[in-house]
Length: 579
Image 1 (cartoon, rainbow, N blue to C red):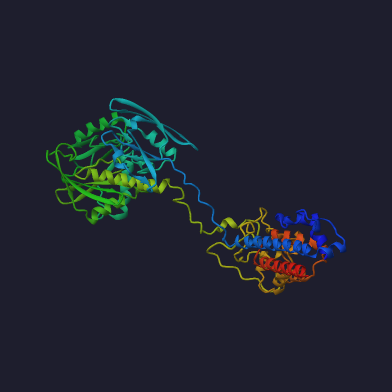
Image 2: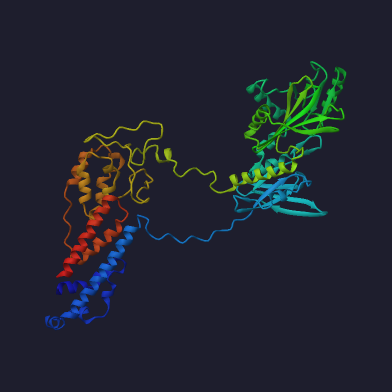
């Protein structure tokens, strides 16, 4: 009893205990702070017993609560953290490139990205914009517009673009392709895409895509008008038949088109092409009965028929009668096929001519800058606004296009010149390697079962070597099912031995010596551990507690050893205090 009293009152013993266990033993007490004679012990037996019972109960209470927290932490039974206050995100800026005749702000009123983030609409024409684009800073747009006679100057960084205006027109002398390049340089998403907007700046270039569709579907399903392209006036000698329609350069709304009746007029037009210094196309004149227009906005389809009343050969010039017609599968095939060009067109329209002999001829395709016609103009604008909001939710929300976290690592976990345990498994599509034979050399690329340890144990060393972990959770022992001696040696080892670096290096050799067999490793594991130097009881208890804290992140075999150590400690304390 005197020996136990001196041990418990020893200041070095109390200082070595982790996390301040048994600090209440340091309170001033004459019976425990200083040695006493046997006579004093006999005269004060009850206070001495009380002084021992109080520290013992305190020790068991602290020890039990600490072990309860240790066992609950890996299983996720701890209290969840208090959720943080949500951060209010800034509104997303939508730049609508269109003229001032349409107020796009009212069509986006009350709409939010994913129902959470506000949308701020900025509207201007190409002629009112200027910008500067950076590699890492995005695109900064300067806008100078006139609103009710007042000049408004504003600078902002748009998040999304809705293009409703032509970026290039030879007839009007407007060339804003440099702005489209700047917006694309800044990496801004748009409807339609800026890539398609730039490609639509040349009608013969777009017509070449129609030719591909014509050859793919055939003349019956995709009746394309016969057209000839001339890069300049020199090859324009004559036409195979008359009348023909000559189109100069890139223009819109019927501009730059001439109907030629005979060869003499054709020569006069050729001289005009030489003065314009541009390309030209010729196509056979079709005596039309009416024009057809099939438009697609997102997943909404509409078909219109336009009949000229004034008798002009251009149906879009003069007076015309417009009416909506039924959407047939033939029309749907035309617009769906054209919507796939240039990476996809969310908004497009196909123009065709229906001749008096009952045949259809596709003559042109338009993008998001197409004019809206008919009685459903407001509905079409609302459809465009809804489409823009949907695309903003798709492109601007973080993680919207992120890969699934369940996707396997694949080649990332396979180094080129480290055929050790860093290879977590063969890539998909290759046969699985055969399991290692018992007693034969270890297979370095055998599949490794999932571990139940913490992520720090599954981390791979930079040199492709094995992570330093206790031998009971080493990959070599888990990959050797035919060696029961290894598992018995691992489960029977003490925590002190499991945490020694020497034992780790013995069971986990470096890759250059992988030729050692599993039987040799089993013999090494069966060798008895060197005798532990004699320690007094306080040092042994301190080392056992510190080893238990250091090995909390072990494998299941370590958990069993830790539980066995705790049980032995409890039995030791029970036997000590029962005396």
